[in-house]
Structures are given as C-alpha cells and as structure tokens.
Length: 200
Length: 206
Image (tube, rainbow over all chains, first blue to last red; front, side):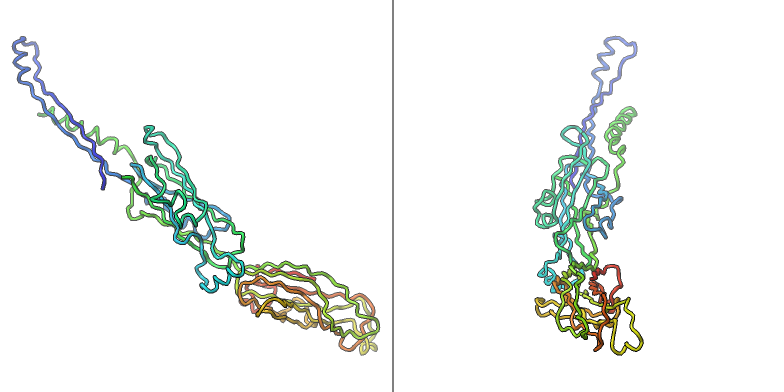
C-alpha cells in the first residue's frame, strides 16, 4: 500500500509572561522559557478502484444490434491512475454453434463475429490546475482493437489520467455495430475487463 | 502542560479534517478489475427475393392439357441464417371459375387444369434437388414440399410449372387462373415443415 505522508513540525513556545513585574523579573522569566517541538505525521493512503455501488453486471446483456447502452462506472482514485479495457474474444461470438457450423457459416458468407465499440467518459479533477473539473473521454471503435490492444484504452497499461476522480461516476458506453454480412442465428457474447490502477 | 495538550489536539484536527469532510464511496477491492458481459441474440430468419410473375399459358383449343414443357414462373433467392431452414413450394390449380359445365358434359370437359410447381436449383451442388407438389392440393397446404437447406445457405433457384394435366378431359374455353407460392421458413424443422407458421417466414406468390 502506497502512502503519502504529510509532516508538520509544530513549534510551541510556552512563555511565562510577566504581569506588571519589573524588567529584571522579565529577563529572568525569559531565560526560563521553554520550546517544545512536535512532529505530526498524517498518512493518506492511495485509494484507487471501483466503488461497489453502481456497478450493473447486466448492463450490456441482450443488446440489439446497432444499439448503444451506457452504464455508470463509479471510480474512486485520489491519485493519478491508468484505466484499461480489454476484450476476451475481440467481438461477440456465438456460443451455441459448433466450430464446424461456424466455419460453414463463414464459408457461405455469413458473419460469425459481431463487432462493438467502447467509449469511456470520466469526470475528474485536474491536479496540475489545482483541482479544476474536466472530462477525460476516449473511445475504442472496434472490439478487435481491444483484443489486440491497439487503441488507447487497451494499449500498454491503458489510458493514463493525470487527475483524480471527482466523486461523480464515469460512464461506460458499448455500441453494438451493425454487420455488413448477415449474422448466423445464435446467442453471441463477449466479456470486457475494466482495470484501474494507481500511477506509482 | 494543559495548554500543550490542547495545541496538539488542534494540530491533529487540522490534518484530519479534510479527509473526514469527503464523502467518497466505499471501495471494494474484489471488483478490481471489473468485468462486463456483452450479449446479443440473432434470431433465425430467412429472406426471400423473388421475381415470380404470372405467365400466360396457352392450353390449346380442343386439346387435352398434357403439357410436358417447363414453364418458368420466375427466380428466387433465399438467404437463411440457420441450418433448420426450408424452402416450401405450393400451388393452386388453374381453374376457370366462370365456366359452366353441363352435367352431361362433365365426362368430356373440365374447368380445372392441374400442374406441378417445382423449385429447381440446378447449380446448388450436392444439395441440389427439386421439390414437387401435386397441383391438386390447394395452397396453402400442409402437404407442401420442402426443399431443405442442409445448412445456412444462399439458394438461387428457378420456380417452374411442369406437367400440366386436364386428366384426359377437354378444358372448357376461357381464362384459367392459379398460383404458385414459395415460402422460406427458418424454423421449418420445428413446424413439421408446414408453411405459414412462425413470424419469421417470408413468402412470395405468383
């Protein structure tokens, strides 16, 4: 766990000030003054992850081809972070047909993989400008790019955000793209992984 | 010493206050990374493109209809995305609804000419076959013939009329009308190959 420490040195002077005494008494009292130094440390641990509330596991189930859906992405990061989205299969693939049937479908000119795009929008507070609110947004237009890590959201460790989250949830949008080829009948699915990590 | 303690408490409070003032959602480490499943369902569906027309057939005058010639009604293109699909063809006899046949003449004359409707795909490889339905069965009929699509396929086929027959009788003079219908059904196997069921059917008639 990375911790950021704040250190404060408090200097406290305890002086026995005279109340209407002579100058000689005052000098004697000054010589008797004490100085106490207190070091106060406060640690604020780095916090970066998903808030449990607001995540909808069924947000993108039973989508219609050509449609788009958005779900809240509640993030909580008090330090700059990276966020990445990756795909298991690079597109929606039918789960209920055999490999042979899939190959035959492709041979006959049908689609057996459906493409989709992912867009991300995050309200953040800019650190460099002292906490100015702004929106970080990016999109990956093809699931194939999510799979091959060819877009900003998936390349390397993901999209680098030099800001902290604002407390408002982000938005994750999935758009199921229409296919030029007719898709083979069946139930299609894919799984995307959203990973968020603090920048060390 | 009492004064010192108060100052220490104040200093700690100054650092603690900002963190306490924030109301951030509770983190759950277990959901990192988060996953989302994306799903969609593509229903079985067939599309039928057709050029079915109404050909004029000359039955001849004073001759029994025994046409062996193939009369093309048009072409169809079928596209189905499921292996359970079938092409169904049916027909309705050529009949002369206005003809009046005397009882005495019914042994000689007829106002009905039957035929066979055929879907013929000569270039459909090993799956090429023709479906026939005797024209005496009215459309729609559960007895319609199915040309099964062995897997998801695009089928280009001709729709023909063959084997015109007046059952050895002379057709009464007049205009005869009939029809040929082609239905593509993505759920044909589930429907017992009977046409006209299911919402995903596509149909074209001459």
